[in-house]
Image (cartoon, rainbow, N blue to C red):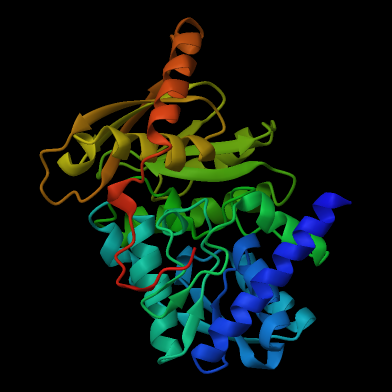
Length: 360
């Protein structure tokens, strides 16, 4: 009972804060809406604060890199809860990914850039919270964007959704991380018709085979630029994954298929600004890669000599044959690194912001 009252008090405080902020910026709000748990929670709170007629949801469509069920999910939510909804199309991710994987830059420039342009001066509300890099800045209001959930974590976000009795329909590959398919391309996209097409086809196909009940369901595209190596990640593991592997082998832009049914080693080359900063490597390995692989992975890092590579590139994947021998020591080292690095924000993925207001 006490926990329920605590959540109700938190929701009441958030609604009051949103109402006050909205009136300071013209009484209308746009919500950058992906259909995931964060943006859904913040949309419901905004609707309570200023009325749904004063809130517009804006969803960015990434062309072939948008999951096919995404448009249906966001449209159904808007219709059920009475929100206005606009779709904005932007395919500029290919220019960013040309120099290596960069979800944070895509979020800033493609997603939020598109929504801000559409907003035309209206305040844009995001679902950023304390679990992501924007939330860790401590800033709630910056550059025309407002993050009312900035000082709360995923558990509280889920509690807000539970309070409203809203169940999130998953968009894509991971139980906690919705997103576009391109996040599974773990190398530069120098040829969209080859690298990008492989990622788009494979990650739509995996959800055709495994549409629900998965903790993880994705296909990572790795390998040298001249070869697309597809790694199928499905957790919990299902035998049907081998049928998917056979079908993927027939795709003209996929050269090799690996089923993630045993521990793997990833050879990664990285830009010197990442390779030489331990916390940046840790951020990519622990926060970006491990949560989206169905098996234990070990990363062997190499400094890149390619001055065009802005982030990192998974150039080779092979079986981790000594996993059973190394497991205990590896887990111990990971725990030590986690304790050290969890207090430090990764500089390679910090948002570029001009703070307008700091809210504690």
